[in-house]
Length: 554
Image (cartoon, rainbow, N blue to C red; front, side, top):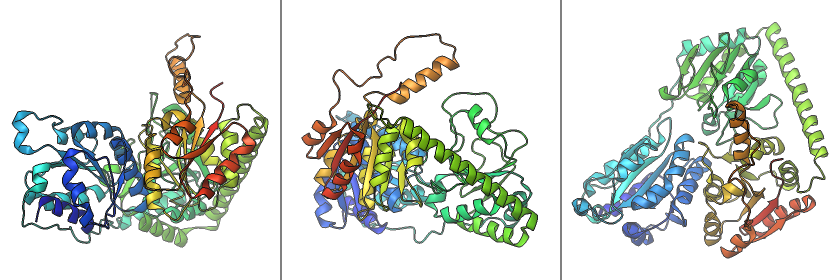
C-alpha cells in the first residue's frame, strides 16, 4: 500500500469524518485519493487560516479530533495565527501540510521550507515522517498527543514523495486509552474540609468544565457551598449557565481589577484553565495573601500555572467534584447550610439588581441612532430559538452577548481563545458541521470579520445554513479602548484622534461582499428590523448575512 493510503486509513481508524483544507500541488495525493474514502468529507476553505479555525471549533463542538489540510510553507504561515488560537483553546486537532519532495531538500525548491520548525512553537508536537514506513506510527502518536491533557494541536508535514512510497505497515491506533484518573482520596478530603471552613468561597471555571461535561456538577457544588462563580476572561465554551444567579461573569484582564473582583473571598477553587490572563501589567498578585487557592486539574501542566496554590489535586474533573459533593453531603452542618443559603440569596439579589440595571441601561439607549450593540443583541436574543448555537467574536460587545443570551449547557456557545481575531467566521464553519441539526449564528465585529471573510464562500459552497451577523461600527473599537488605557497607564497627555482605527473611506459593504460569494443578506440600520432579519435568515435554510449598523466608541 502507498503512504497516502496509510494516512487516510489512519484518519478513518481514529474516527475522523471531516477535513477542512485549502489544497495545493503537494496535496494532490490526498485529493486524488479521497474518492476512495467517501466517509471523509473535505470542506474547502479559501484561506488556510479559515481551515484551521474551522477544524479547531469543530473539535470543540463535536468531541472528534479536527483535521486541517494546508499547502506547504506559505500555507502553513497563513495558518499560524489560527494554530495559536487552537493551542490556547486546547483544541485537539491534527494540522497537516503537504511538503515538497524530500529528494529536493538540498536544491531549495520553490515553496520548500522547514515546516516542522515553523509549526513547533504553536503545537504540542511537530513532525515530518521520513518514509512511508513511518506514517502509521507518526499518525498514531499524533492523535494520542493531540488528545492527551492538556489537549492541543499537532502538526504533521507530508512530503509528496513519501505519500507515494510503498509500505507494508498499515494504519494502527493506540487502542482504548483511559486518560482520566482518580484524584487522591486525601486530596479530595482536604478540599472538602477547606470548602466547609470557608466563609466566602468562589469558583473560577475553565473550559475543561465544558469539555469534560462537568457543568452540572459545578452548578450543584456552587449552590451547595453558596459560591460566586467566575469564568476565564476569554472562554471557548460555556462552563456555567449564563443566567444562573451565582454567575459573576468573567475575570478582568488586569491584576488590579482582578484583586477588586476577588479580594473578599477567603477561598477560591480553580478548575483546569488558563486563569488570570493579563493584557496590561500591574504589580502584585491577582488575589490577596489571605486567600487560599485550590485547584483541580487533569494535567500536571495546568496546576499552579500562573499563581502559587495552597493545594492542587490531579484528577478527572467530573468524578472529583462528585466525590467532593459526596463528602460535603456527609459533613455539612445546619450552620453551614444556613450560611450557604444566605450567600446564595445575596447572589440572587445581586443578580436581580444587575439585571434591572442592564434593563435600565438598555432603556436609556433604546432610541440611539445608530443603535447600540446592546440594543442589536437584545433584538437578536429575543427571537432566536431555544436550541440556537452562538459563535461569538463580538469583542467589545462580548459582555452583552454573555448577559443577553441564555446559555444553559456546553454546546450553546463557542468563542475564540488567545486574542487573535478572525476566529468567529472561520470557527462557525466547523461548529455547523459538528451541529447539523441545530440553528447556528455567528456574531462578529466588522474588523474581525475581514480577517476570515472567505468563510462565507465555504458556507455557500458546502450549503451550510449559518446566519452571519456582522456588527458594523466601522472601526476597531477595541483598539480605541486600549489606546485610552495606554495613555492613562503611561501618563501620555494627548488629545489626538485615534490613528488608523477607523474602517471608513471607503466604508465596508458586507452585503456586497456576501453577494459576491453567493450569499443573500440584508443591511439593517433600524433596531426594530434586526429580529425579523435574523429570523428570515434562519428560516431561509441557506447561509445568510445580516449586517447591523451599530454605534462606535463615543
